[in-house]
Image (cartoon, rainbow, N blue to C red; front, side):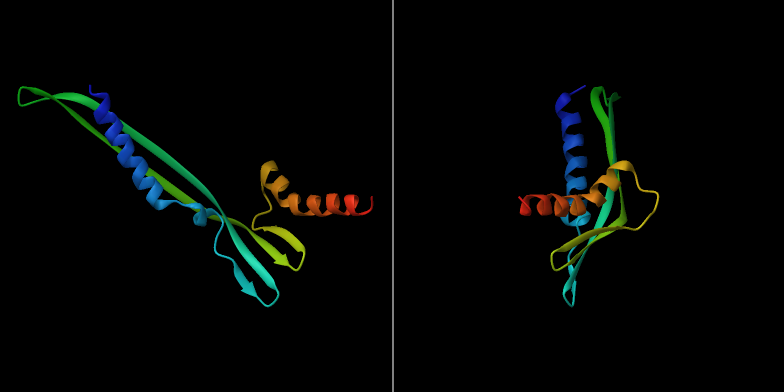
Length: 119
């Protein structure tokens, strides 16, 4: 089987996936309301599959193959900014440990900043 043909299939699938997804998909466009800014945050999941095989075709060997990808985008939170106050507002209460750590980051940065201001 030609490695080049498999590479072409993989490249084609990855190009299609790149066309569907970019950084703006995860961190959305900020919305300004008065003195507050709201930024939507989404979770992106994707799957990728490809396969190929050699099959006889008119007395010649040919490669038959295909590939596909799927993308799931789910809103998970909003970043709310008012003046110097930044908060992550999760949409769901059943967030993972990583998502909880991310949610705590703005408050931790604020506490660290206060510690260094007092020195």
